[in-house]
Amino acid sequence: MTTTLILGGARSGKSTFAQELALKSAAPVLFVATAAPGDEEMRRRITKHQQERPATWQTLEATTGIGRQIVEKIGRAETVLIDCITLLVSNILLPHSARADAKIDTDLIEEEVKTEINELVNCITRIPAHFIIVTNEVGLGIVPDNKISRLYRDLLGKANQLLAEHADEVYFLATGIPVRIKPASNQMY
Image 1 (tube, helix red, strand yellow):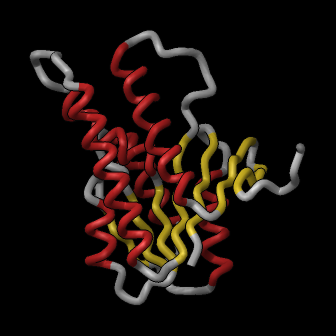
Image 2 (cartoon, helix red, strand yellow; image 1 turned 120 degrees about the vertical axis):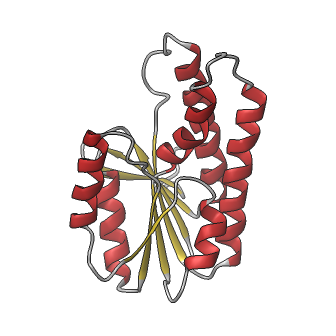
């Protein structure tokens, strides 16, 4: 079984491309949604995404601990679509950044993200399924002007690197166009 990592910017077509890949497999799908409905606008987004997914797909809503929960809920699914790592990392970071004393233990948060991603990688190696993982590339813009945003960018970048290292194929999307970057589609040297 293969692992496909799909990354790109906001509204680049990542989720649509991931769903198209899952549909092509014609296998039972477990859709892992990591979004937390924190406000009304996010609740509307979640509802819209739910309506766009095939009714035959099983859905697992998990804001953290996704590796363990996938193992528990895999059922007969042969394709696992995770959308998305961007929100997963945010779900780990935000409770720390909301603390009243504003002291943030970056080492602790980095360890929590690393543990979460390693548990997901362990799940991927244990389950005979095709994994399709969606994430954002947030490191292409300007350097954020505050500590939390810089920490988030760095944490997500490290999570993406770890997932890309274990992925069989990686696609980068821009303007709805997927470009395969792993394995390289052609050698330049």
